[in-house]
Image (cartoon, rainbow, N blue to C red; front, side, top):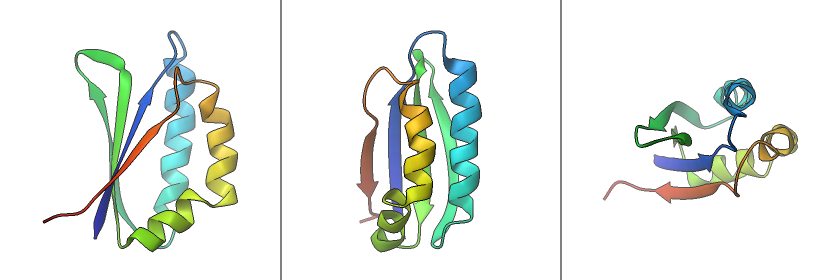
Length: 94
C-alpha cells in the first residue's frame, strides 16, 4: 500500500467552488481500481491550503488514476481555482 499526499492552494474567495469540484474528484477516485481510502484536511494556519491524503494499493494503481482522462478532465476545472500547481508526494511506510 502507498499513500499519496496532494497539496493545493486555493485562490482567494474561490473556496466554495473548489469544495464542490474537489468533492467530485474524490468521489470519482473512490471507484478507481486500487483506491483504498482518502480524506481531505485543512491547514489551520492557512484555510486556503488543502491536503488530500489517500491510500492506494500500489503506485501503478495511483499512476493509472493520475494519468486517466477522467481525472484530467476534472482537474481542468479544478486548476482554474488554484493559486499554484498542485504538489503530489507519494509515500510508503518504512
